[in-house]
Length: 151
Image (cartoon, rainbow, N blue to C red; front, side, top):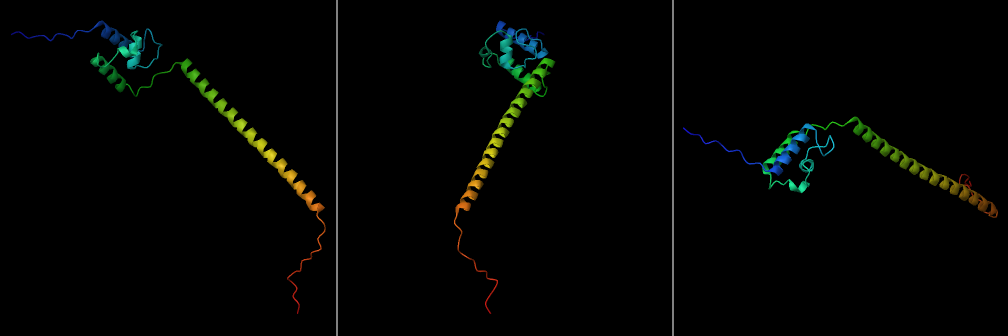
């Protein structure tokens, strides 16, 4: 009885480089990319030291399928940020909030300036109205009240 052994598929040097890069990224210990880099098809190619367009589904269908499956199965896992990354993110949020505060203060100051201009104009017009009414001649028109009716 002879059983025919299944020959393992030949793996090219390029695919081997991609698989090694894939494994390094999975364990979080890349050689080329910074630590904490998320795993993606492009990042696997970059970690392998080649252009991202070199890792194509048409050329490496099993590897690309493995990468996509790993990404899909680890989608819920949030990457851990280093203390430095968290500090930089907090600084960025603070800077954004400070810019927002500054913009709101400028908006408030502009509105306050417009309010003061309007109040000044109202005062000018009120004084002009009083001055013009004072210049009117006395009227000789008398109003008859309807309260007294002749009997």
